[in-house]
Length: 180
Image (cartoon, rainbow, N blue to C red):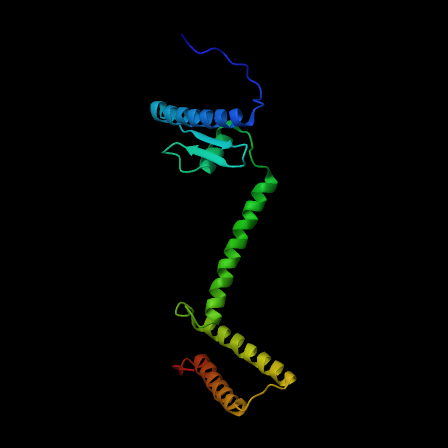
């Protein structure tokens, strides 16, 4: 004798509803796995539970839910994402790329990973650092925190500037440069 039919309506008792949800969730995931294996179908399943938890299933040959969503869009002609969301995704990717570039620039400013820079890039980095140092010194002078090492630092900067000018001259005239 088989089971009797039940009326499909909301279960009022919360305990019974929770137990039914759990059993039926397991059942539908089992069915998704079976159809995926038996029929070599690409299956994707997302369940948003009443407690706010998300359960998902993707057949083994499917790499992700986004792959299934893109395939659905392509084959059905229905758009799951509107143009606004696609533009946001593009903007997110651009922001990630910009962030990566800024991280690289920051590492260069710290003197890290500069081996890949060519001569012009190194000269530009050197100018930026020199200008930054000048700005820091100007701020220190305004605050009155210039230390005793100022003269020593000034002589180092003067020597550095002279070498830099000499290097620029040598580059212009095709001669070997000095280490600055």
